[in-house]
Length: 129
Ligand SMILES: [Zn+2]
Image 1 (cartoon, rainbow, N blue to C red):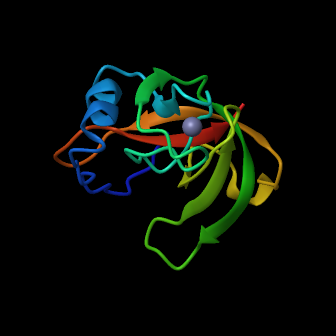
Image 2 (image 1 turned 30 degrees about the vertical axis):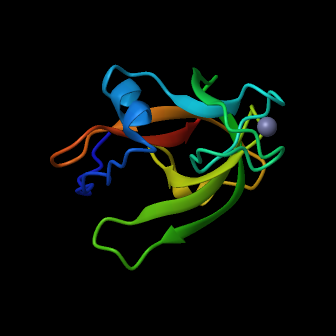
């Protein structure tokens, strides 16, 4: 859709390199601890649930629900900042796109879409489905 908002390239760090590499090939991945099996966000080398040190990137479903959101109407191109709780458990800060912002509601199911950035890998955003 006609979302003209320019999206800056994400900051790629050692901890998130694998995530952005996957994003470039259209895959949405999240860190999962091989010790306790739980996914977490943001990416960390040590599992926040069990302090385990073996975390690997796995393909996620790309499905989630809106935990909370805010429509930024003062921007030239209004946009939505939201926290989305992924089906795998963690909650991530993101944008909601490709929808009527007035119809958004908490608890709404959303799925991931990748948005192109100005000079970097695409960033995951979500849209209602
Ligand atoms: Zn763990």
